Length: 351
Ligand SMILES: [Ca+2]
Image 1 (cartoon, rainbow, N blue to C red):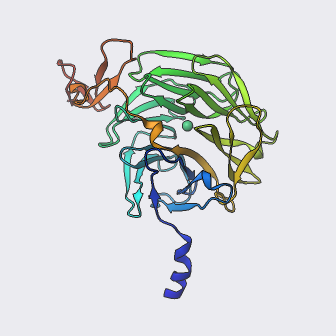
Image 2 (image 1 turned 60 degrees about the vertical axis):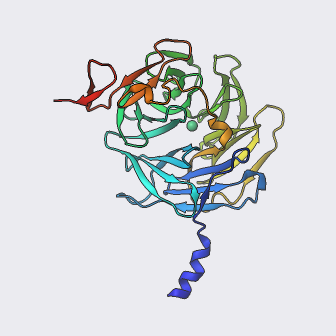
Image 3 (image 1 turned 180 degrees about the horizontal axis):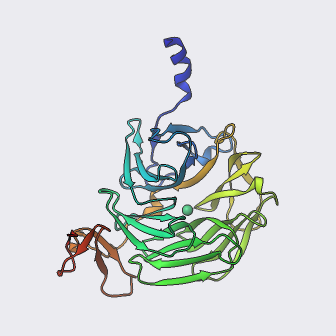
């Protein structure tokens, strides 16, 4: 028996090491069957892949759906649409700790975005048509937005104060929009989206990228102000070859793409014109389904002005920043099972 173990053990590299500031990115890919794969894309198409299997939870099989990272605390967050939970795992070498961040009140959590300046985690639920804000330390949850019909993915830009979303599925309901982080202001950026499935924000260039699944598989892009709507990648006509998630880092767009019932990972220059791409051959094996990915790097989560100061705005629970140009700078908000007292800062249990 022990000889068998020795043979098997080297197949599993149980480590998760975030890149140093100024280095990276490290590409982290979520596999539907509750696994996390990481690799350094600069190693080229044959890059070594590290694989971590998550703790199984209460349900067997897959369900891992969306991934996000917290650079300062070296954490990866992910959602599971069948467990209906949000989890975290630390990325500080070989001693890995998995934790449940949020459970209860979710149905199909498909979108995840972390505000690293105000330490709030946003979760979107496709079946509930809602967006929640969650305290990643305590698991406290506030329903921020309702009636966001068929919301599929979200991205946050805490410096400029916007939460971007894509929603809708049919060709006449697809849309891209943004909310202020306190949920007070809503603007639609474009209604020209068809069958959108995943959203990525290029912070430096202030552009949004998404996947159009049907009628042909495309990656599209628009400026955050709604200008320069364009197609940057056109895949095969078959739905079997659809891209499913994407992330931006530096000059590149990375995406996962179904291929003959398994999926693989590609990157190419995000600007049009150069169509050569790298296929990372070791990322997918067999029928693994890659559901989500993120490029981990310090520069993506740079420090910026915190609208809530260094004391959470004096709020006992959530401090939600308003837009940079507006006053007051923030609002104190309570978890769903609590109410705000007359001081406008302290939450108390509902009677
Ligand atoms: Ca995304």
